[in-house]
Image 1 (cartoon, rainbow, N blue to C red):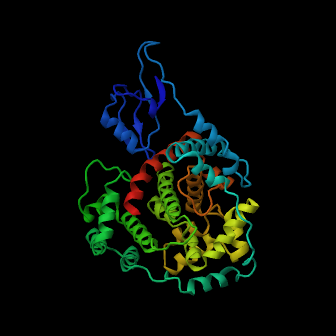
Image 2: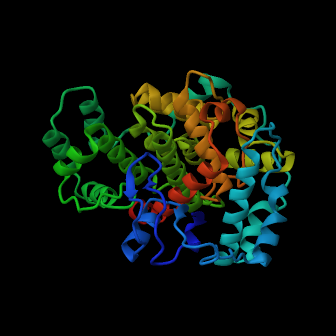
Length: 413
């Protein structure tokens, strides 16, 4: 019996142990002979390794993993640039660097070495310090931004109705009817429900069936997330990678969901929405005063500090606080508001904010887009202690999220 990476499995091999998904769902039974269908199941669920039966000693040997040394070496040379921000010592650093190494090497193979190197080694221009210290501080400055003409104060009608339905006793058919009024939204939701995001064995043809299968609350959160992405997609700002921003946001949402399933968190269905919206405050900054955000990004790059402190220096507050206040104005559930507001400032009683924080770090390490900067932020030691995940589990979660991400991006963007 040997534990083999999925890339080293061959058709006909026999499982020595049951294979479970990250949330504990039985996928394949011990004794199963690996077929084409079995490989599809392993890939859909992001399984990275499995225990395989072998016969007499010497009958079969574990295949050698072949790594492209050229890309691996070039990715390794970028580690110091990607992990340049000051960071506390935690056991997470080694698996984070391994995740970065594999993902950066893979991106080099797909997009070329120069494109990946440029992410981390672009020499930032010196910020002009035009706005530093000029903005109104804290809530006063936030109120001014949110009261401005930024076209973010009115939610889509469908989202308003979904919020109202969360606070009342609505039947599955009533929820399906609310969503069904928006044909485009309905189509996207059914595509998500039938994708690897859920991995159901049979196709779900109707919204009412989807509500029954995944639950009202989860479907409401998915619908709200899709509607808000559509609302913000027209936001395009010169010199800012909006495609990378949305990839990071979607990736963070998927990672939050995977973490919640792995750690069996109560009410984990809203983690996807919390992760998806964690940087919504930065969208407001972009739409309201893009030149100020550019200055903050330049300042963070030049001084090698996280973007949040640079935002506070220039804006008087950071994107987490701004995003949290916006969601408060929209009457979002308190748990999601707290997760967005505190995903960089973790407190022990805010477990969901901790998951968003960890997902944000993992998304950066795995190069799943960017939120203005590419550098990998440090993990808060309290979050790491709270989650207590092994390096293998982190890698497995990232692999599962990346597999889901490809499909979900095609649906949502």
